[in-house]
Amino acid sequence: MSASKMPTPQPAERVGAAPRNKVVDGPADEPDFRTLLNAWLESHRASLVDSLRRLARQPIGSFFTCLVMAVALSLPMGLSLLLDNVEKLGGSWQRAAQISLFLDMSAGERDGQALREHIAAMDDVSDAEWISREQALEEFQQLSGLGQALKELPENPLPGVVLVTPKEVDKSKLEALRQRLAELPKVEQAQLDLVWVERLTAILKLGDRFVFGLSLLLILALLLVIGNTIRLHIENRRAEIEVIKLVGGTDGYVRRPFLYMGALYGFGAGIFAWLLLAFGLDWLNDAVVRLAGLYGSDFALGGVPSSDGFSLLLGAVLLGYIGAWLAVARHLNELAPR
Image (cartoon, rainbow, N blue to C red; front, top):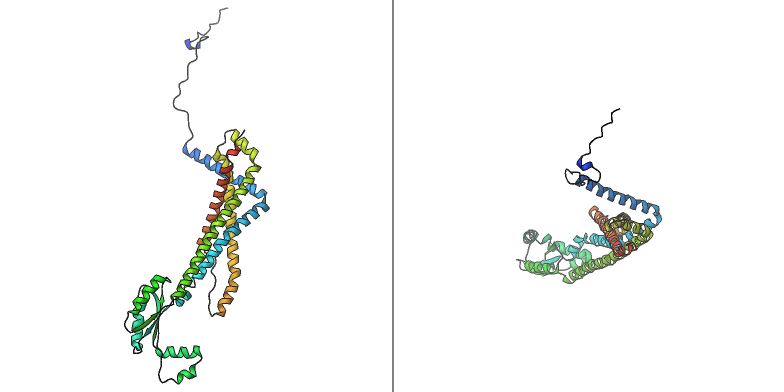
């Protein structure tokens, strides 16, 4: 019986010999950009879904938080919209700031019409109206209640008038326009009530400043509200966050769901604020229409423009995001595992 042949070991396979190193064809495969982008998007999607799920578990608390934020957002925006609606009465403001040009007694109908056309063509003039001497006397008789006495006068004492409506209610521009109109031929006197214009300008500037100051205060209040709300969510998840950081979770990974939560609070508050403003302006419009009707005006409040509504919504989301970011940044160091 012949002995079986044993295979001759190779040098590198002999007992005690060091194993050969495997030759690597190239560097280790790294994830490409598409894979990294998909992972990043999936992480954000998971954070968003988790934030929505947590808010849905507390519907009453989430609703009232959004409602408080909506009230704070709607106050400055509502005042700003009211000021915008008041400025729509521009025709009334301009009529109050009209420049009255009293012509010479010798100026006739042809002179008045020619002067009116010349003034109406000016760049800083919105409209010009010619009132003849006869028309002025007739209106004065109706308004003064002295019609019978005025008829006894031997001649018409009233001059012809050109009423000039400026495009802008600005004190310096109005004064410059008045001086230029006073130098026109056949103009005896150019009269402008600058006191009323100054009062109007002061009222509008006061309203703008009040809205700006109120907006700053309410923005600060909103940041405090959203910051305190996010802080409560952080405290409820403290143990979970410490475990995440213990296994190597980054600050960005920990911060992400709270940022989405703050943005969702802001989005809900923006929607509620938009609805509150639309309902409030519609409710107030009934009283405004009745009041304007007593003065023979058809003025009515406008609704919330779409551009303002989307700006409000975007601002609310940004405030929620910023408030959440500040709250998490303040507590992030405290969340480090011990």
